[in-house]
Image 1 (tube, rainbow, N blue to C red):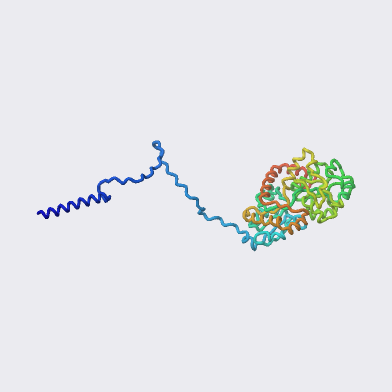
Image 2: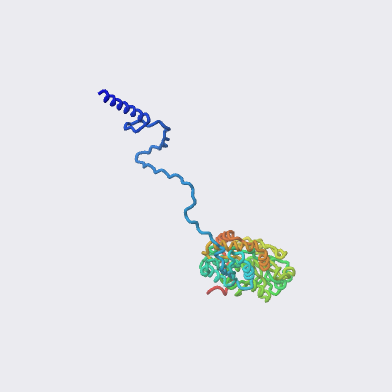
Length: 430
């Protein structure tokens, strides 16, 4: 009996000791033993108490770390690959032999190596200006393979039914090459106007019924039949100037009145005067004796800018705007200036993609700025050092002058109708 008790007593004693050790070591305990004291967790940021009925706002997502766009970028335009093997046609809206034609042919001979891909360049002519304008706007390819080459911007075509009111500003401007300031020039002044003709300016003949002698005794001017019949701004400005200064003059209409035709008509004695921009600068190269011998005289500058010297010879007379009657000046500016804000310009058809236009314009500008051989040859036929108008400047100027021109349309039409009735009644439909 004594032995059994001792064994049981020992077992109970060992069990109690084991429980004490487990409790001290943190063993599993079914009772709610307090958690050990550690660093307390941060308290949540307090939120504002919302009024009853106001829904709990959805927390804004955390600002993500900026990453590259997931969208596939637009492939860059490979101008070199695009133009390689292509043929680009440059179309002059003039007849062969004139200034626009000759300058365009020289330019075209050099452009290939400056345009990415070295495309073949072909130069052509279409002397019907409205037809070429309309073709360029509606039928010519819009892939950079057709470039229209013009003497002036022809803003008026954008407001005429025959050319479907297609605005010049809708074309893609590429660049312009020379000064657009126009000169009133007379051939053989003494022979055609009288013995003192080389000492006078246009306004010196104001109020006279004759120039005082010579074969013609008056200023003989000419424009193309289409320009006269339509009342083109150039014709209207020239006739308006002659009338407002009250000088002796006669105006004629011919099928073609480009530079080559003018020179031929001067030699025949059909006319003696022309008003255009680039011709003044060409004489020292094409007719080097004319200026020193007094065979040609500038009777006035017609704007928009001021005439420069030609072969070392300054323009003989100043600008007509300083001598027109005050009441005529605004009318003259409205008619003359907007259509002549640039000269010898290149255009792509409307709708041609910008990347194609940019590549062509940069290439053409590079030729005029970095090819001294081309500049020299171009200057030889233009009679002046080319001054390239870049794409951005020309585009903005076109939009600006087109808006001015639109406001002046009524003035030009009013004066054109009046002058046609006065000097060309045969062009008025009965």
